[in-house]
Image (cartoon, rainbow, N blue to C red):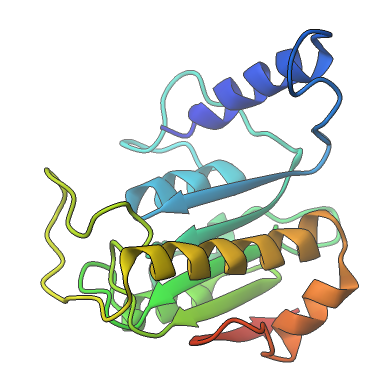
Length: 202
């Protein structure tokens, strides 16, 4: 549920201030990013847009204003999501949001992923990973108990995970750390990652 954001923030605040912690004073908790996959991405999108709605939210949720960006794989809110429900900052813009989509995703299709990107009211980017299916982000394709993706990825799991992780890092560095180098990679569609392309709207 979306309240997981609140729980993780509470733990992070403790660890960041705890002298004996390996994370002591190593986190900038004023600028936090969210990541998610599939339904986990929907939970993240709800949390960062201040939407508390069953089944993706519970009583423990409150909006975390320190979330400054989010990027999600094989996920979205759909092409017909009401644009008025997107959270907007005082400047009238939404929180920067990235969508990563595998070209062979049979669970959240490229058409659906692009529809989510197009409908989003935010600074946004849409990344396409050639040869990736819905589970190219996981340790194994079609994990036990998960909805089966009938499409077989042409990428290995290792390559899929690496490309999705590198793309996520570039996006979060651009929007959490203010990296102009990484922002330019996104806006110029020159990520330097084989088989990954970018479309963006600032």
